[in-house]
Length: 474
Image 1 (cartoon, rainbow, N blue to C red):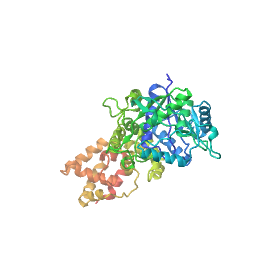
Image 2: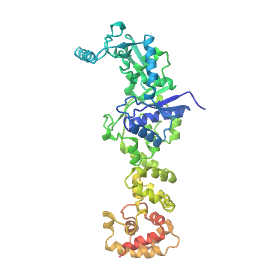
Image 3: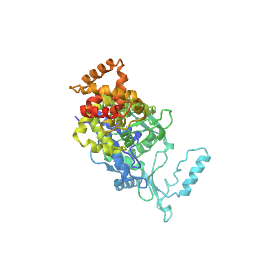
Image 4: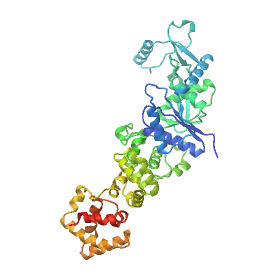
């Protein structure tokens, strides 16, 4: 069952898909999914000096990794410049716009005079009603909209409520530059109309733009889309989100080992909630999400909370899914290519999959999970970290000789039988289990911490386990 709802995500390709843009895309996607509608993707690439193909690729890559799909091909705003100019000419012909010949020096003087008089720096409308015959020769004009001078414009917003703007503050803004290129204000309205967008969901820094854009909608006789301006994201300290808070691109979160479903979950909770639910599946978010439930106040980004949430999703994820996500991660981390080559071996992949239940219990990120799995792929003789080397003193090495003999007698190489054998050995020496397990862990993994030592033994297998222990025996 589909509805008539059409949302759009419209990033500017001047960099990566940053975390605020990712949340905007998510809210558009969730609302479209919730209503049975569709989401479109428009690349707002009219700023040719700053827009790059690499940034377009990065945005599409980020959206794809996050699992936020859209309908049809991405629309290039720049490619539609002819259509935008056509509408500017129509507004001009119908008397809703006019040519302005004010020079840059005149505009600067207007702003300075307004500031000196304590007024907002606005264009004063000096060419609004002048006869075209007065136009100076050799000057390419801009085209300005004729904005209403009296009364107010009301933006009826699903999140912010009714927001009122005095028309005197909106001025006659430019819709077509002197070189014939459209401004953002015009291009957005034309594109949203032509693409059939019914709901505009974007950051609340666009609220004033919405008021200005409604003037164009009114002059053209077009329906205004439902507006929903969502609050911006702040850092934990309440300041505007910046790189020091974690305002990175989506690709950075992938490289740090976050699951896309965990990042979706976390971003959805930045400004929207469903009761006290913190942990939500994507299916639940789609079922519950409504743009009208988004909070007005700014949300606060907390990287520690994201990491904790990611750890929860890792612990509860299907092991095969985690193996697939590790495959997505590896091309983006140091040493990943070497591990990709090792995992091309089906036996190695099976071994990592068998180890996954123990590995994922301790990991908050996929990077941590991969790091803790390194023992599976290390070649003998192992190198030891400082703590493991400290554990493997002369007494521990001597103890491993007895443990090796006890483990060699085990026929059924399973975690529970290995556990029983080592416990029996420890009791025979009147030792606590940890006194034997710690040097075993160090000998088997080269580290002082790892998944459960009996799981490690089971995953490594009989031959490899006994060989690693023998390498460090006294």
